[in-house]
Image (cartoon, rainbow, N blue to C red; front, side):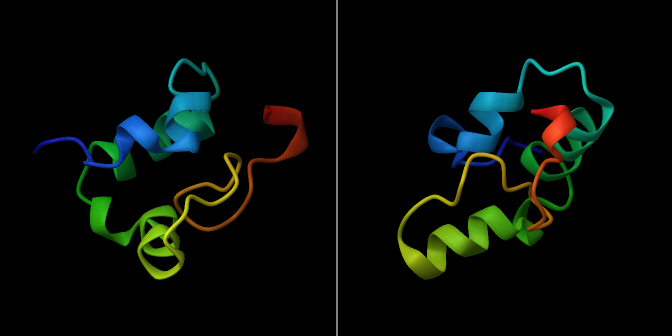
Amino acid sequence: MPDCELLPICGFFIKHQESHDHICREFIETYCCGDKMNDCERKIYRIKRGRNPCDDMMPTGEFVPERHR
């Protein structure tokens, strides 16, 4: 499966792609490069509003907890 076409401009991916945090890694594997790519709330937000959401908004629509930023 190809990676999401929005990765080059996705603030979450850019900011957290090198993270060793289990939560961030799992979301990247599942949403950015996996089966749930089209269920990504970040992608849906961008399509609806024409701009990227906050970098700390995860693909589920929730925000990365302070301790993981």
